[in-house]
Length: 141
Image 1: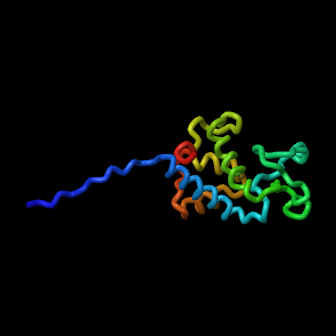
Image 2: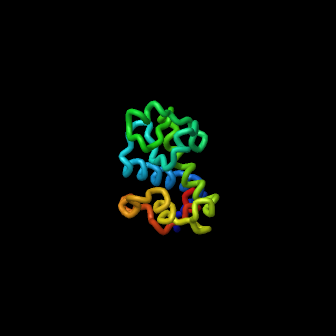
Image 3: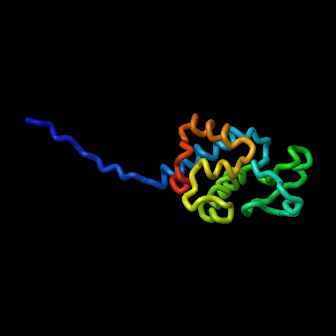
């Protein structure tokens, strides 16, 4: 007589996997940037930016900026770094026209906007971590 096999119903939790991919993606960005404590990968590109108090709703610390890399934004709280970077990519996805990006933004499109001097190296690094340049941001955010 054949043994009865129990079949389990595993629910695919898309949000759970998106969160894992987001963490992989953001951590790879941070790792590739080689950031100092509190430093964001956001460059100061205009004198007006030096008047900002926040970026993506997170407090900027201009005192830390004076001691570190002067053309980058530093945050008051280290724990705000990941959410701030995440918000930048979400902004690319939600309002691509604002950033002159295509409607369906790929990882490659976003990285070329995000890192205008070292995009290709960052894309290769992301690919070495299992993140395809051809994925859409909407696949992970």
